[in-house]
Image (cartoon, rainbow, N blue to C red):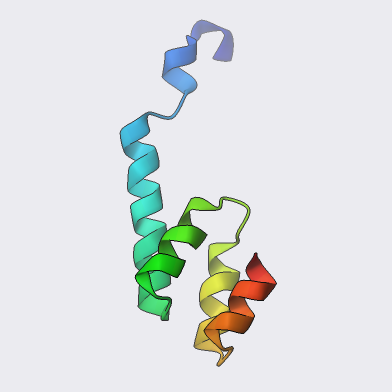
Amino acid sequence: MLEDMNAATIRPNRESSQDVLSWREEQLRAAGYTREDAVRLSERTDVDLHLATDLLRNGCATDTALRILL
């Protein structure tokens, strides 16, 4: 019953959002992005995480991957 929920119930909290960003950054670093690039990509919710990691894992150069993603 969605109408019974208040707005605070359905809004993600700031802590869980930060956890998601941290996890995305960790995955991007593990794939081979620099910390700086991983942070930049993790903050962009329009960047597909699987595509970003697959590009590097399949031999794409980081600079080229960033041009594709951004």
